[in-house]
Every structure is written in C-alpha cells, then in structure tokens.
Length: 129
Image (cartoon, rainbow, N blue to C red; front, side, top):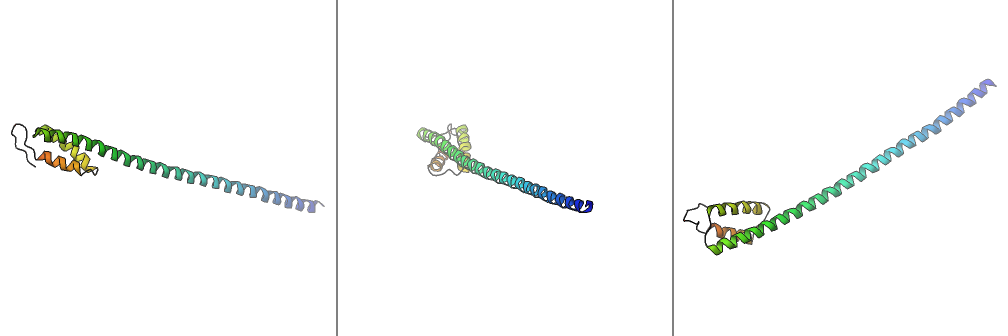
C-alpha cells in the first residue's frame, strides 16, 4: 500500500504543481497585460502632449507675427510721415522685418517696409539697398 500511496501522493503533487503553474503563468500574463496597457496609455499621453505643444507653438508663432506686424506698421507709418529715416532706425526696422518675414509675414508689412527703404536717409547719407 505504501507504493500505491506514494504514487497517489506524487499524482496529487503534480496536479498541485500544475495548478500553481497555471496561476503563475496567468499572473505573469496579467502583469504583462497590465504593463502593456500602461505603455499604451503613456504613448497616448505623449502623443496628446506633442499635439498640444505643436498647437501652442503655432499659436505663439501667430502671436509673434501679429506683434511684429503691428510694430513694423507703426514704425513705417511714422517714418513715411516724416519723409526720411536715420541709418540706425532703418537698421532696427531691418531686424524687425527679418523676424516678421522669417515667420511668414508679408502683405502690408512688406509694402510699408519697402516704402521706408526708399526714403532718403536723415542727414543726407546715401544708403545701399
């Protein structure tokens, strides 16, 4: 009976081992699924943050173009009214223009800027275009 009992014991031990292995593999699969969901959630959040950052960047560019346009418009209107411009003022206007044009600004800003570039220099200096 001893031999039959030990075979029965081994069978039960193997069955218990199989059950424990099932729980172990199931637990590992569950953990891996959970980690996969966390990774996907992180990717989604990263993509949302990227889109938000890109949107905010476009809005900041638009705001900068508007500010530069306003300043170019004011300065150009003033110099056109004066009928002349100093070399320093023309140089400062050039810095504004480069930023404005580099961000895609044109239209009336470009028209006014080109008009100012044609003005005589204050004090009779000759300027090169």
